[in-house]
Length: 102
Image (cartoon, rainbow, N blue to C red; front, side):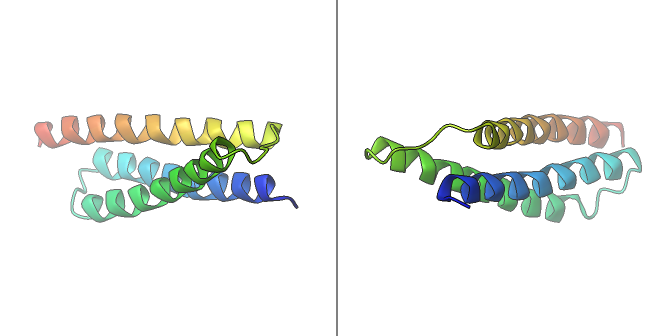
């Protein structure tokens, strides 16, 4: 497995876990179980940040002249990263809405 594949899998696994946590937060919101949500956001954000860091490292390598081979796997990793970011934003909005109903 080459470095780009390892980075891609690292991104996919970290942001996938973050997305799962964000979805769990939405479930907690529906159940009006707000107590664990702050910790869940902190944990999800930590995994999302790890995915961003891996992605940024890859971009920095390419910017410094190192050849970065394009692959479908890397494209998938970037897609998952963007989706996780979108789900995070939507989860934050829903959390705020559910808290207002309280």
